Image (cartoon, rainbow, N blue to C red; front, side, top):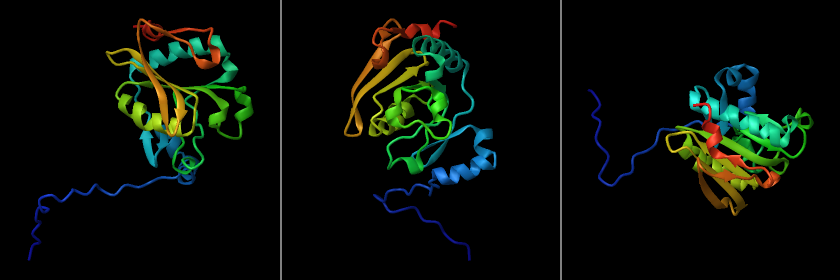
Length: 203
């Protein structure tokens, strides 16, 4: 006799499909098998996020921003799309790879281990379709780690920058939006000004 599927009773919350929560140890095994490198994945809150397929505005904006960062901080203090550590309790299921980070010490000092939150002056994400994720999940993750400054460059039609500062109690107490006509100075280089619109100069 065929099984009859009945609808859930009214008021019953639908169940989400079961998801696999990945750990960094498991991802290391995938990395050894060549899966992570081939797929360009990052681990956030136990989920593997696909970083492949950046659109041209993201690529252009990141390239222009990297030029400014290198000029201000020097290329030995900049890492692009490299894994970092976060809050110790978050580390087992998180290994984010921001678009760029500014280090407090030259990157050759981190050949055997990821930079830790206290090693970071600035973390940057360049967002298009990932904007909500970067402003929520990533912001919460970086705030819990007490990363002192976090920028999100929005390359959608809005063309703006979100600057997060003052991490406390798992949240950034200061989040300011800058338009493409405005400038912002990083905390670690208060004399330098980044003109937000310059990230779109190549278009």
